[in-house]
Length: 236
Length: 180
Image (cartoon, rainbow over all chains, first blue to last red; front, side):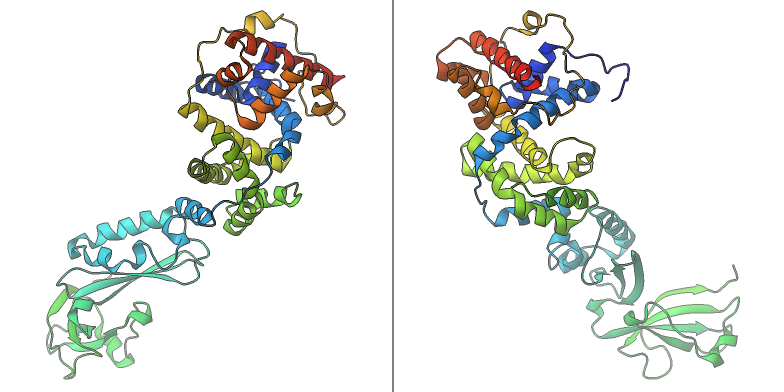
């Protein structure tokens, strides 16, 4: 047994009080006072536990009664949130995602991280995906979360509003026409394997650009749609 | 509901095992729901209370391993305490009963203050027989139905302070008997 300073000796009055608490006859105020003492005084807490064990033989008097079967799912959704009901929830709410402006994509992404922090995603049967897009926008970010290893992947994709479109990546050399590096495919995890003959063309100073093209990529070999993002390549 | 597996189930719940939680719910909720119904005497209130109780069980499962007593009495205690808190909030008990702790406190240390749960102690029901029948009945009804002192006094037609005095004396007699 512990012998902390506050673990002082208990008296008969303490034992009677512990018994009153376990019987349940005390007022709310007294019950809170008793509970505070249980935390502060281990010896007093043991008096309560002893009464609890002593009176446990009366628990048989209660018998049993089946609650409404729906109660468990209510408890689970309160404890575990939307995850307890796989088809519903934020992740699958297109209205939620589509309601966000493109400019707030990263705020939305932050919200996703927060939402995934609690309740923690565990043992979800399928990977979770969300499309982060903006009304009228031409680019979307496809977020997919693998519950098994905790990895979230963010892949650019053409926004659904753009219809059946693809995002195509181009390298724009200092001189000459842009050359296609490939189409960003959602299923490829954001990776594009650069054709071997193009690799020498990737170096400091060239510009990378992404355009919206008909599904599958530009039919002409040259950009046909609007450039949505671009930037110069540099060494780190 | 004296299921020895409850210990293991609560241990798994403490680790966040949701399947174990559902299993524990299915195995124990008929008992805990009966507790809620008996004390709250209203099905809707009892169902609301049951939800809160299992949320507490999920949250407190980690503390179970460090406690004495069986899993069943731990679960029932959570249910009873919650239901009693609900009923006290609904029907406030008298807050102003004279504090009798001075009168009862003779300053003598509790002889069994180690207060470990002792298996060799007499069973409470044997000792209840040593109380006068109305007092034993009041003690048991207070426990099972979650009656307040006010309700006990009403039912027994005795003044509030009287009922508290003899209920506390009854508890100490029970303790003395169980320690013999």
